[in-house]
Length: 142
Picture 1 (cartoon, rainbow, N blue to C red):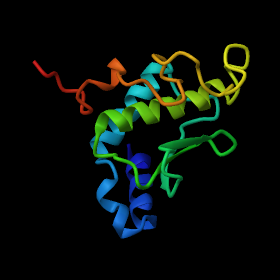
Picture 2: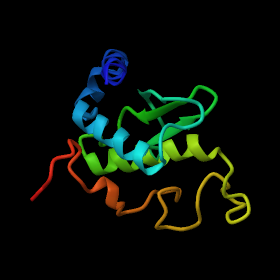
Picture 3: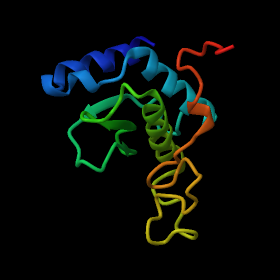
Picture 4: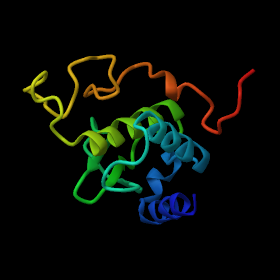
């Protein structure tokens, strides 16, 4: 957990003040990483990817960089929204686990993404992804 906090602090220091209000809280970041790690049965082959933040084109929420084993999230993303954060981290984690062309046979136009709109690996991400619906701190709602 110390590494996650350190990455978040570095991201806060490197992010323009206009974007600071949109960064995720540490419990949300830890919760989203926990979901991704559980869904993909552990870390990607490259190791434990840090989560960083950077400016990106408006339609891009995140990017996995396999050569650096890092997940980069848009510094302008709606990260206080835990569900969006969780879906994006789980999707990008999947790129690090599966590689960048796992859907070549089923989706030759976009081999990095599933053609199934209900898959976490769909290019726009699923609208509903049950593992991300739970409380990020792991508390029971009942």
